[in-house]
Amino acid sequence: MALNKKNSRYKLLLKDFLRVRGTIQNRDKILKFKKSKWKTFLFHLNQRYKKTNLFYRVFDQEAYYIPKFTSLFKRKFKQNLQNKKKFSLYYGGLANKVINKYMDSSIRKVSKVSNLHTVPSYLIESLESRLDVTILRTHFVLSVRSAQQLITHGHVYVNNLKVTKKNFVISKGDHVSFSKKVHPLLVSSVSRSRLWPLPPKYIQINYRIFQFIIVDSILCTNVSMNFDQFLNLTSVVKNYKK
Image (tube, rainbow, N blue to C red; front, side, top):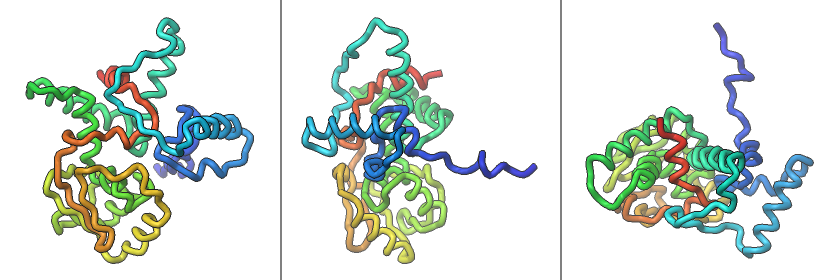
């Protein structure tokens, strides 16, 4: 049975930003939209930028957060769904079953290892260790999907070995390079990027030869700069738990 092209094609990712009321993945393209359905969203977005005088804000995800309306079930339920959707969009729109697998492994790590790290910390570490997400953090690409396309087409090498799995897990000491065919594409992506948020400290990048090395553990670095909105990670864990 042939697949329906309308159902199998990628959905427009930017439309999901209207539902979560935020510019996930730091997309400048949204500011150029002129249709009426974007007017309210862009108005509140510009108001927020005027108040902060910054285009990008940093939120500490480990900070204690008290919701404004704690007694209203409807509002709390909506906030939980928005947190869940935002968390997925930050990593390219991962499916629920994929995040559930990372959640189960994070829970097992906490049960085995007795330290100060929590389930959200291990969950973020697992997602940030993905090869596609790591390439995005280096600003060699502008989106997670672009990073996945480079990987699946065989243009990414880890320790001089070709890797075609986008969920490949990298660790401390791994060396990542790109084929010469995509170097012009990487130059274009870096030139169009604002280089914000800044690349994490655990990645040492050389923009001249298009290579980078993982020099430290992700758990030793604060990854809050990767999120331009506050996420209640405790709520995210509860909603993804089986």
